[in-house]
Amino acid sequence: MELLSTKKLFSRSIKDRKLKAASKPILDKIEEEFDRNCAELKAKLVDKLFALTNGKTSQGVKDYLSIDVIPRGAKFSMRVLQDMDYMNVNPSKWTTDKPKNDD
Image (cartoon, rainbow, N blue to C red; front, side, top):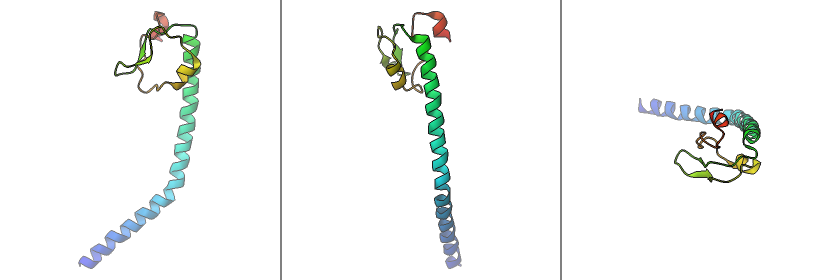
């Protein structure tokens, strides 16, 4: 009886490895497409943010841990906006322009 259960265990393991090997190219393609879409969305975000902040002085852009990402008094630039990690940045009070802060 024990021999039979060991056989099932190993046969399942072999099937799982074959399945993982077969799905790897598909996962790589999905990940590549995801990365490309993220890059396109970030480029659009940066373009729109630059249009809103061009010529403005920062009031201190911070991340969620209150660490300065763009210090107070610095000018917004395309380079700075491209290098930011938008997943961890606090989106409020970037400038003194209230309507732009609320957008």
